[in-house]
Length: 421
Image 1 (cartoon, one colour):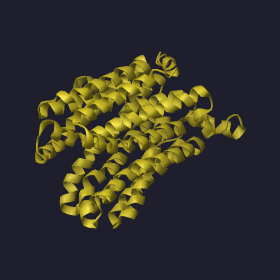
Image 2 (image 1 turned 135 degrees about the horizontal axis):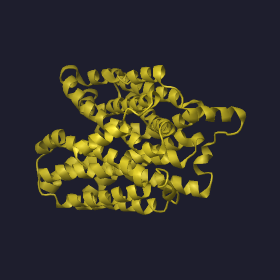
Image 3 (image 1 turned 135 degrees about the vertical axis):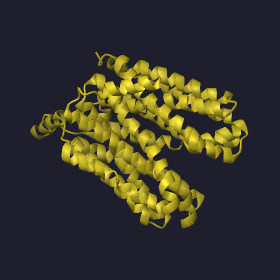
Image 4 (image 1 turned 120 degrees about the vertical axis):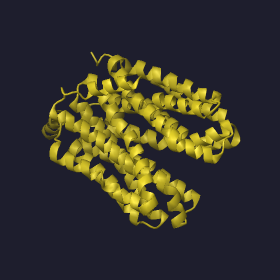
């Protein structure tokens, strides 16, 4: 997809035909993803100086990095339930406030254990935000737009990562890592917009009325209240685990993979990470919007099939990389396919589960996959120590094939293909 096609699709998805309420939903959820992911990514740049200043061990530093993923699982369930019970808009504000607090307080902490707690709280906030945002989008837009709109919101996370890199470069040389976390208050801008301009969707207002009249009741068991829905939830957790494992596993180990694959120095690798990650992130963003468009037009079964097969093939292609340019181009293509599917999960879950469990399902499934998939970096490290780079890449490629096999067994994916009509 060219840049002009990317811009055209984005313009179409956010055209002036949207109502003012839809514009507020899209703007607030996208900006929320951007600023919350920016806050969450600050640690990537601050961890090394934090370890040095606070005399934290490498193992403790690893726990700090992992705490947000573990917190996400708890926050996903908690805030998902709250969103389905008391309202999407209120809970969206709560999650953003929690992320803001957990980020800013890091500037004042001076030991590993309090930092653990802060990162756990941040993970709770970012984990909770996902399902709430997806529920708002599903209830604010027609079914044939949800894929693209949810993908645009997910792209906000990639923009946040770029912002984090830029701000870290500007702030840390003068004010240190504590100064970087101090600007973590920026997501409060989203809270102001949400509180002032956003209101609950008509679908949730009807759900609230049904709660009060007794027509409907909330039950966490709805995620698996029938054999078919239980199996669907199980498969989606497997797919989301692989999605997370592929992303974190590949991105965290990419510099090491490059060094071993090409025999280049750590200094060259560092230069690649600073410059070469930008096309990869751009590839991810374009992939998200492309996947959302395909999802809306031909349904999830074919869309996921195309992207899962392409992800497996492109990761395997890394074994044939022969120079820096090859790896950069392949990285962008891998990002396009492997991370392009991320936004589509929210769109699919919003269609598969009823309104009374929509946010809870999205958060619980995503949080579970994220928590399990976070261990991929450890597994890849073990494979790297005992085998070879080729074994790592073959393992990653095989994961996407496994995801494809499981995806094809979800019966309701065939029905979702007709919702765009």
